[in-house]
Amino acid sequence: MEDITVEDFVEQLLSKEATESPSDVKTADNLVQTLPKWYDEVNFNQARRFYWHNCYGLTLAMLLGLVNVLAVPSILKILVGARRSNDVYPAFKRYLSTFLHAVSWFETDLKPGSHSWESVYKVRKRHILMSKAAMLKGQGIICQRDLALTLFGFIGFTFLKPEKFGVETLQKDDWDAYNQFWRVIGYMIGIEDRYNICRNSVEETRQVCQLILQRVYTPYLTYPPEYFEYMAHIMLEGVSSANPTVNTPSLLYWTKYLAEVPGYVYTEGERIQFQQLLKDKLNGSSEDTGVDSFTLMSKPFIENSSKKRLLYVRDYNSFETIPEYKELSLFSRLKLMFHSYFTRIYTTYYGRRFLNATFLFIIKLMKRHPKMTFLMFNIKVSARYLFNFPLDNSGLKPNSVFKKQTTKLHWYKAIVSCWQRICGSSDTADVHGRR
Image (cartoon, rainbow, N blue to C red; front, side, top):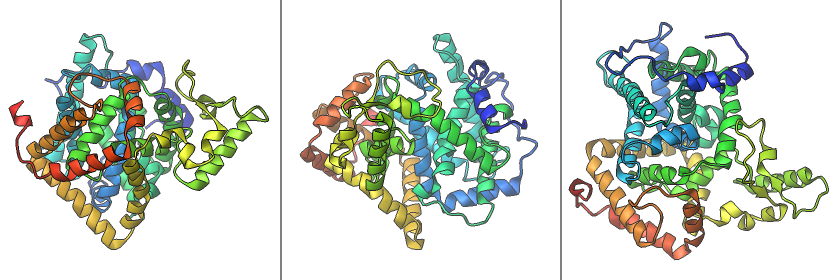
């Protein structure tokens, strides 16, 4: 890799050249997969052991990271423009496939003919075909920058906030091994070394991820592109079809909190600290003025949005007055509160074994009985439609529709939604199979 500073690397990644460099110069028919010269099998397998020891926490971090990726306009544009994007079921299938592909990379040795080798090959080939289709539709291409930003989705929160997911090491150099694992995966899916965010050392990778978070994901999640909410809901509602503990509104709140979106706080101390920050920013001006979220960001990659998001001191007098928190239902607030408890449980010996075993059971269920997962998703979409929830099968929905609906979701609907999750698991009809 080039010996450049972290700041220069990020500037290079966000440059026009990176957006014009395609994800692959090869065609799908001529794709030949090879390992990088610096591949270390021992190191790679150490990372695999590290993952399985932390599979629940690391995969949760990946899930939230991939929600981040949907906020990148160029990536979202290609996903929205994909075939039958207005149908929630193909979109759900696409996200489920991505999730299972990522897990499969840890299951076997990365050798020609292995399951993980074939999985990486399929992902790279899919990128080539999607990029070609998008270019023909005039929607741009899958570029090197987009691949690198997608890689952040898999590793960003893991490297930056491991304590939020209860991640622990087995060996002193586990983080170095995990860094090299994803550096290899990045190479295998077509990321050029000059754009690979997994650098030579884990310390440098963390610095790169921090800059990408501050400059790209914090502003993009503060001002998300149109249809972000729709696609994010499909992803999270799909996962919750296999894992009833997942709650979409609370996970979206937590994702934005981890992405350091101004105004999203999790503890009482953070609320007080943020309110004081707003007072300092006003510098004696009237509290009715409000503080532009854009001024709270560090060198954002995007231009200042014409639609300002103002934050007011009075809104942070308590959690009950925080606009984003008020939008959550009672059930979602409880789920949000339990995130920290699950992390504490996960750091214990038996808690880790239980949650890892639960995760492995869910993966096994999705692989061996995918129709059951699709059935649960179909039931949920139908049930949501009864409540006039915007996640139905009638086409793309703007972000504003979800915001309006969230404010109308009363406590009794949250309880009914929870009851549907319990009752829905006993239904065995193959709804998706009849579509």
